[in-house]
Image (cartoon, rainbow, N blue to C red; front, side):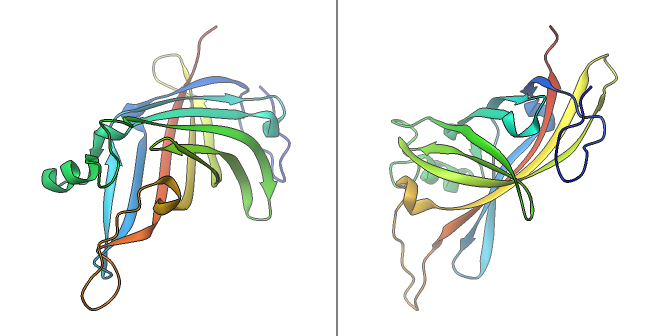
Length: 188
């Protein structure tokens, strides 16, 4: 067990390689709809690997999201989002994230990386919170992480324009991305 070097020690910090437990994790987003509300959605299929290093800032993350697994609780909308108008899942079924660095920022931890959506890769920074480490009921070890960022969908080729008569758009450009991740330590 190692205490990672941050401004505040992380209780129970464990260095190792972790697999995301998708049954206890959530990959979700919100986007403004009709200029008056927000639509929330989730991705049901995703996977990833987290490596917590002895020195916290040497840690890394890789992840994949199956864009076909979008679920906004409305089948007709989900089918439209899967179409070439939005995600074009027939040609771009998988999105990826690869971290390029982890740093301590004024607000906590910042996870820098490259996000690829529809074949377009852009840098993103996620505000990261390490929620904790602990033993589970099956003899394993688990870790919890929360992360969030805001992206502009146009930067990734999701650039459909659907203007409203009175101004504004049906779908906002800014997308808030939220991750609640539980991961399981790989056994050696």
